[in-house]
Image 1 (tube, rainbow, N blue to C red):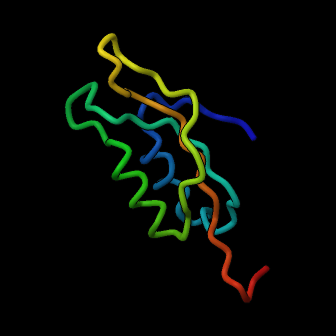
Image 2 (spheres, rainbow, N blue to C red; image 1 turned 90 degrees about the vertical axis):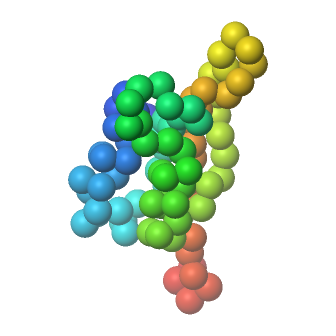
Length: 87
């Protein structure tokens, strides 16, 4: 698995490969919890987007915290939800 750091354009990258996303088993993307720049997509939008494509959040890694201890960013691992009929 390789992580491509898209500088918070992860959702745009995912949208750009909508015709391929059904073939992905896992998605690993960096997301922000707080807005670092104007009109930035936050993690809740990415999560909802991937839920719509039958992915679930499996873990959060490499979390970055600010000086106050507030979570700013992390790497999010999603896996495809497999139906019982498609094991």
